[in-house]
Length: 122
Image (cartoon, rainbow, N blue to C red):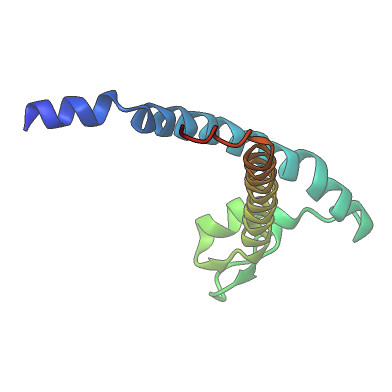
């Protein structure tokens, strides 16, 4: 069993996956910053300078705060603004991954078409 595990680990796929997870985590932070620091402020400016992260609906009459952080301290809230931001992060990340996969698939197809035919056996 140990030998099988060593063979499994030594295959390139496992190392490729490990590298992909690490790069993906770092890339996710870049996309989060893109959405939080660039896209959402522009969208907020279009809609009157509002910060979507602070959009919430109080679920208790005890909640009278104006910021999401304070409202969460006072009671239950429906933080739909945060959800909008996270959903936008996901959509942008999914679009970028889709475009990358599409580019790789197109490259593979082009390389397959350009492969020289195998010489005929004598």
